[in-house]
Length: 219
Image (cartoon, rainbow, N blue to C red; front, side, top):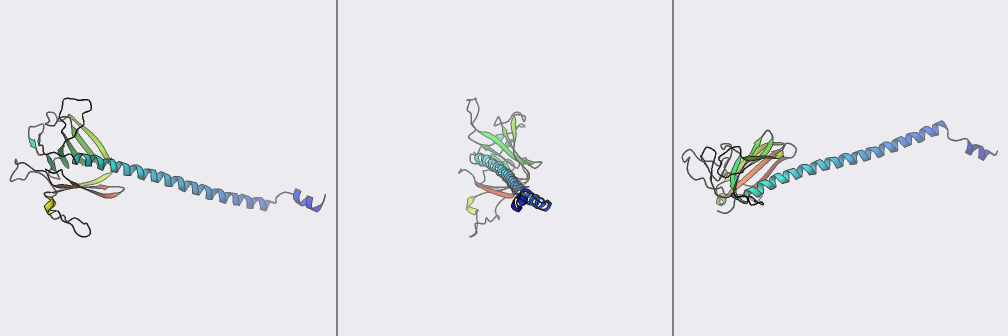
């Protein structure tokens, strides 16, 4: 057997095998780390996208309701008159109003007006909708959780757009905005007109503060 044949037939030394295994382990670890990071990034993106979709649906529902606000007061289950729109810390709900456009696909004999309430409880934003406009039974309503993980809900009301002010940075001057839209003690039974605009602020645990400004329908 020639020297060349002896060299070719002797195989790998232990050091060569260890070096090869080490290189294989390094390459495998690097590949696994890259795949793991990619999968984790995809999962995080999926969670963020899902959360943003939830927020968008919640604001979309509120927007559709507020665009159809009508100046129609109601009577509650005790027979007391509730204005067309009330809200704030002094009101029973954070925001309560009468809206039009209640769809009736099966043609039930009922009004196309509906009373809806929005309120925050236990870090969830809820929407209540009543099956009768002038209520005779407090139990005849539907409650939906439209957004979870809400740490705060703030609503401001503007009496007239004539006093709406801003500046060159498009920042709103809140001097004339009100925290509550309810009857005053001086005129507890007077008609309460609709505000000209409403600003809704949601503070989310994972995203932060989000604001939406709504102009009420022209009266």
